[in-house]
Every structure is written in C-alpha cells, then in structure tokens.
Length: 118
Length: 112
Image (cartoon, rainbow over all chains, first blue to last red; front, side, top):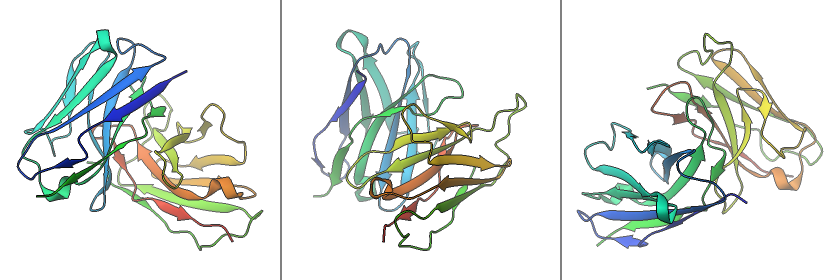
C-alpha cells in the first residue's frame, strides 16, 4: 500500500541547514508529484514546494531563496533542504503525494517535528 | 496569493447532530472547465491531514457519506451529518487552483 515517511534531525540550530528525507513505498516517484508542506504555530499549514514526476521543481516564493527539493528515484526518496533556519521555522514538516496538475494531496506522511533552537 | 478564511464551530457539537464548516476564498476557485478546485482535509489529534473532499464536492476514497461538500466559486461548506467520535479534529480547506496552494486556518470540531 501507499506509504510515506519523513525522517529528520529533530533539533537544528539557528542559521544552520535543515535536511529531511521522505521515503515512499507503494508507488513510483516518476509517476507522481511530491509536495512538501509544513505546519508551524505561527502560520499553520504552509505549502513549501514540489518536485514533479519528471524531476523539475517549483517553490513557494516565501522560501525560494533558501529551499531545495530533490530526489533519488532508485531509493524512492525525496529530499528537502532549507538553509538559514530561524526559530519561526520550528514546526512539523510533511511530504505528500499528488497526481500533478489540479490534484489534491491524497496521501501524507506522518510528519517530522523540527525544533530550531540553540 | 489566494487567501482562505474559515469559520468557527459552536463547540462542542452533540454526538449525532450535524455540523457545518464554512470556508471562503479571496478569489473564485471555479475553473473554466467547470470544476471548483477546493479540498477539505481532516487532521485528527496527533495525525497528519487526510483528504476528505476534492473538487468541492467529491468524496475521497473510503470517506464516509456523512461528509458532503458544497458551495459556489468563493463560499464553501463542509457538512458532517450525525457527528461521531472519530470526526473530532481540525478541518482545513485548501485551494488548488493556483500555486502557492493555500490553506485555511482550520476549524476545530469537539464532541459533546
């Protein structure tokens, strides 16, 4: 069945870089778009960006200068990297799947809690 | 960016009663193809959001028919008939007409 699971560091220091991996099973990354969404106390649910089934990416302009999304299809993994972290980046980070185009996010991972603190 | 605004529920809702959650968008979500690009998600306590409704009124696979979505281009309603314990959580609307995809602030449902 379809599964998505995020793994990440838990605690990151301000100004450092966040790296999260989303490992998927039950479907192919070359057939679906993969989205990143975060949930913070200050802004609620925020769409961050996505990687298309073909491998190109799009980012929310809120994060564009410090966000990078990539993947390794051989390992069924999608990666989020965000630099210059601030305390307000503290929250839960989710990966989610969609079919591309005008599609809802039909499967979500369990999320990974990230705390930005010194 | 399209702003999504959700209304509050008069909590707690008695078990077995119906509940209606409202959502408003700052721009019409009605596409020229006739589809309205509005989703509803439920986030149960301690869980990730799960898709309930897409295209404003289409239930996702496995979702109870107690959930129904309706609306116009900018004003939307999620109705839950006969509320049950498993319906407790926070409900979010999301527009998927444009990027950035944007979410409402959430509406909490508590059970009496």
